[in-house]
Structure formats: structure tokens, C-alpha cells
Length: 392
Image (cartoon, rainbow, N blue to C red; front, side, top):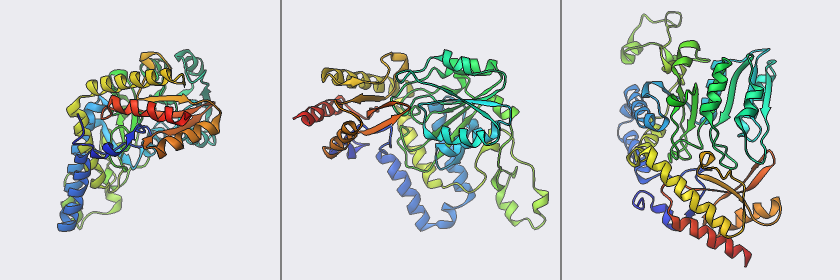
């Protein structure tokens, strides 16, 4: 169905979207078109108008995917890391506060937790049980001194999808903010940031959004907009209506321009942002929107079901949760043996043109395969054949 957009998938079995996505031709074309413009007319290509137009287009394309209005999507830097850091610094936990994270989560949250602990913030960690969490575990950790709950909506190792709606409810009852890393969800599964009541939803362009590297985005709730201040505004955060007039105005002085933009935009990176990456993101997101987020999710979960069945037919251990409500496009499994055997299985599969990864955290480990809507059931079958070949 998507062969024209992904000709590169004809030469390999790509089951590694959780590591990095494959950009469709339209995204690559958008990047090339911008580079052509930069070559022909560098002044226009690098203008404030070009940057503003690229941001507007990318915001509009991301809004249906994240489930919020375009005016509450901001661009924070080059990756999810920048988006999470903006959210954490805006919430600004202080000595005597606590934050809650999950032990199986991406290393970024550990780095942020260590940074906060150096300020006297208590870090509370939910411990997984065989790669799973129950909301009661978080409930026991959250209290009136909890400033933020910081989790991924889909766990990067085994694809566990957390009930972030219930988690947000519990956190909000205690007065805490919810910071969600949705990079393993956005583009493959519905996010619905507004409906679920999430304060900050961070994403990066390079995985399931199928765009080039280079964009970190953040969906900011109305509550956060009203209650919090931007941690580090830049010069482009200033409330300037006409930048061309601003640059030419001889009366301006640094002391005279301190009014920062209102609304979610105040959280946006306040320096020059590359239109090239934004153009690629907008083009990739347009394909997701053409498919539709609900249909994309249906396709992903159908392929995931086929993948699990293929692995079970091979009598391999599947370490991703079996419940449909906890399922995502990521499936973790193990071949016979230990860590080294599973690491080498991933290496050998890649050498056979089947792209997967070896991943592990907090005692959960194995070979990680991930399916997206551009995949076909033939890709799942190809993985099965390759795994049978490893036994030969």
C-alpha cells in the first residue's frame, strides 16, 4: 500500500521503528526542496518569514497526531530531550518536593532525576514487575509534595503502554504535573493529549513520526500555560509583531524589550530554528494524517498481533504485556540463551536484512522488534523465516 512512499523498504525488512523511523519520499523531497531554495535564494530561505511558515505548517500537521490545538505545540530544540528538559525546568521542583519516575524508563529520566536530586528533590521510582506496572504502584508514591510524575507513555524496551490517563488523574488530585515522553507512541498510536489531561507531551521527529532528525516538540496544557513560566526564553520569545521593523528600529535597546510572548509559545526555543527539519516533519506528518491516527493505530496493532503469533509459533518467549490495552508497536522477545545470545541474534538478523535491536533496562531484556503501518505481514513472516534460519 505504501511502496511508492517507501521504496527503501523493498531492500530490507524494517522492524526497527522504535530506534529510528524511515522517512517517506515526500519528507525527503521537502528537505531537498528547502536545500534547493537555500542554494537559489539564501536570504528568503533563511528569513524569519520562512521559519515562521515552517513552524506553522509543522504545528498544524502535528496537532491531530498529538490530540491538541496547534497553538499549544511548541518547538524546543533538536530532540525529545530538549522538550522534556523544558517541561522539567518549567515545573521547577525544589528542595522538599518529590518527583516520580519508572525504573524501566528511558535514561533521559534518570539524568533529569539526578539533576533534580542535587537540588534536594526526592526521586521516587516505581519498580516494574516482569516488565509491567500497575497504577497502584504510582498511587503509593504520589503525595501532596509530588511536583511532577515523569514517564514515557510507551516503554522503549518492551513496548508497555501505560495508562497515562489514570496516572494523570491520580497526579492531578495531588496537585502534581504530568510530563509524558510520547516518542514511542506519536505517529503509531493515538496520543490524545487534551482528552487524557496531560500537562506536557514531548515528542521527537525521528522515530514513529518518520521524519528526519532535528525536531523536539512539546504539547503544553492550558493549565501549564496559565500557571508556569518559561525556564529560559530567548530573543525570539519577545512579543514582537513585525521582526523586519524590529531589526531596522534604531530606538530599541536590550533593556527596553523584555515582554515575552503569551500562551504556549512562551515555552518555545527562543533562537533560530532550522526550517529544513520542520519541513521534513510536516511532510511526514501529512502522510500520517492522510492515513488517520485511528486507522494507523489499528494497522499497527494488527501487525503487532501477527508478530506475537509468529514468535509464539516459534516457541520464543515474548516479554511484552499480552493485554491489548497495554500493547504498542514494540514487541520484545528472547531466543534461547542469555544476554550475549540475544545480542548476537539481533546482530545476525540485521546481517540478514531484518532490522531489529537488542535492548534492556531494569532487568527486562531481549530482542526488540517494532512494526509500523508501512509494514506488511510479509515483514513479520520474513522475521520468522530469519529466526528459523538462525537455528539451522
